[in-house]
Length: 386
Length: 96
Image 1 (cartoon, rainbow over the protein chains, first blue to last red):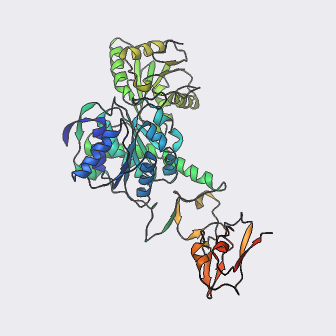
Image 2 (image 1 turned 60 degrees about the vertical axis):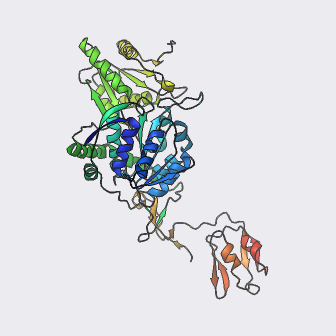
Image 3 (image 1 turned 90 degrees about the vertical axis):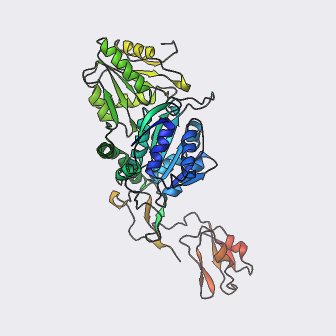
C-alpha cells in the first residue's frame, strides 16, 4: 500500500491499472482526458500491459471495447458529456450483449449552451441504457470503485457493463491523498475475467443475434435480472474488498445520521461531502438532519431509500440534473421508491450545480431550513422563482 | 454448406440463453419470406463457372455435380446471380 497525492482522474487510472484490462480504447474529452492520458503513460512505461487503442470517436471507443469483450478480453473505456451521448447508440448494445465493459464517465454538462463543467445530466440521461451506474464521492472511492467495478460487472450473475461516474472537475481535477493498493492485493481481490459469452475456436458461438417479438421480452427480462443481482454482488465485492484492503463501503447507498433525522437530504456524487459537513454543523446546533447518499443509480436502491427515510418528516433531493418539462430524474426515482413502500411524506427537489455552478454551504443550510416547512417543491438553486 | 435449422424452436423462458450468444452453426428460422422473384437455373446452359456461387451475397448457392444449386430457404431473390451469369443460365421467375 502506497500513499499518493492524486486527482480523481489519476486515482481512477491507478485503479484501472490494478485491474489489468487487456484492452483500453478511448477518445479524450474534457474533463475525462487525464484518465486516458495517465493510462497511455502506464502502457508506454510498461507498468500496464494493455492494448491501448486510439480510436477516432466515442462511438468507436465503445464499439472497440465490445469487440474486445466478445473475445473474452477485459475492456475499459472512458468518456464524458457529448462523448457519452455520441456513443449512446452503443450503450444498450453493450448492455444487451451482456459485455461487462467498465467505463469511467466524467460527469459534465451537455450543450447547448456549450459548457465543459460538471453536472450529471449526461449520465442520468442514459439511465435506461441497461448499464450499472455508480457515483463516487472522492478520489479514494474513485480508485476503489475502479477496481470493484470489474469484479461486479464480470460476475457471472451480473455480466453487465458498468459506468463509474466522477463529477467533472470537482472530483476529476481535485487532488487528495489516496491509498494505492499493491498489485498483489489487487490480484487477490480481482479474479481473471472468465466468460462463456465470447467467440472461441473450441466452442464456436453465434454472437449478438436478432430476437424477434416472440422472444425479445425474455432477453430483456434476463438483462433486467442481471442488474437486479448487482445488489448482492456489490455486497459480496465490498466484503471481500474490506477483508483485503481494510476499507468499508456500504452497498448501493450510504446513510449518515439518518436514524433519528426529521429532515433528510438525498444526494449523489461529490456534493455529498459538503452536505455531510453541513449536517455535522446543523447537528451541533441541535437540528435533527441527515444525509442519504445514493452510490448506485442502477440498480436503483428502492428498498434502502424506503428504510432510511421511513421515520423522517421531510426529504429533499439535491441533484445536478433536470428532466426538462418535469423535475430532476433522481427525485422522480426517489418518489417512486417512497410511493411503492407506502411512505407519504413531503419531498422536495433542489436542482443545483448545473453547468458547474458552485453549490455553497449556505445553500445547503437553506435547503434544510426549507425542508422544515414540509412542502413539496421543485426549486432551481440560484433562481429566485418559486 | 446449407445452414442447419434447429428442430426445437425456443419458445419459453428456459430455452433462452442468458446472453445474446448461442452455439454456432444453427439457425432458428428460414429466412426468405420477402422474396418476390426467384432465380431458376437452366442446368443445360450452366457451364459450372461458379461465378454465381462466388457473388451470392447470402451464400445460398452451392456447387453440385459440376453445376450449382440454390437454397430457397434463405435466397432473398436479389438477382445478383442472374446479372453475373455470363451464359445466361439463370432467369428470375415471379413468386406466386
